Picture 1 (cartoon, helix red, strand yellow):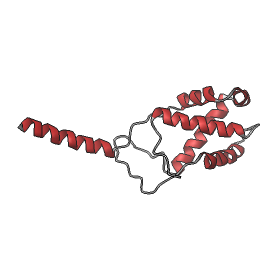
Picture 2 (cartoon, helix red, strand yellow):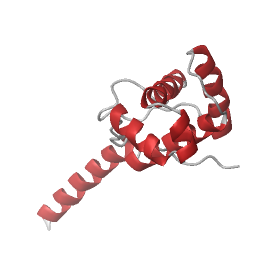
Picture 3 (cartoon, rainbow, N blue to C red):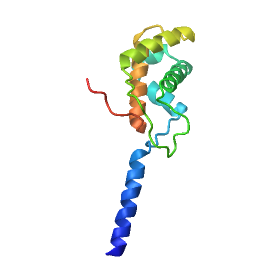
Picture 4 (cartoon, helix red, strand yellow):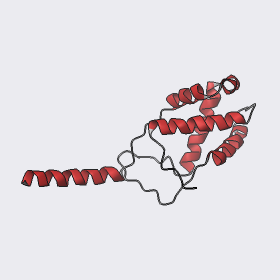
Length: 136
């Protein structure tokens, strides 16, 4: 009985610690570029190079970092999100269109930015890096 009590306390303490730690989601840029490029429709694939997709994804990641969604030193660190940050596809796409122009990425069709955002968000979901959906 005593051994069971010690095990229950140890398991409970560890479960509580793990619940407060951010999940380990590993983002690999080359994998993200390949994932996004594969999921783009053929017409977008014909207009965007791998380099352009990579530059758009890097811009997206920098936006996320600026919003506090990509902090440094996240391994085994308790989550410390103080305020809710909502990243909508529309906001991100509009920002990415402006960033593409600033970075001189020639998007021949604005729909390509929409598709890159959607595929990139799907990659985040695939690796387990997506937080809860905001209520409408």
